[in-house]
Length: 63
Image (cartoon, rainbow, N blue to C red; front, side, top):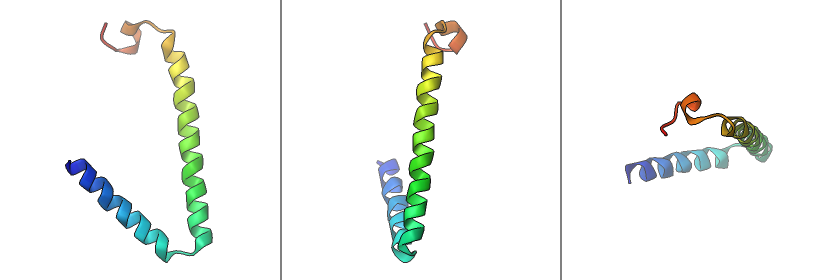
């Protein structure tokens, strides 16, 4: 519950900050965040495929 309150607080700060900057700055920031998330998703997908072929003891996981 505390995590949810903190997340909503951060969301409010970010939205409040976006309301006070010019639209082009908000668009550029949004595109940068979208690119970062896309690169993260691609990296995780590729890394997950490489990990899938290794035995559990090599991944450090429990059997």
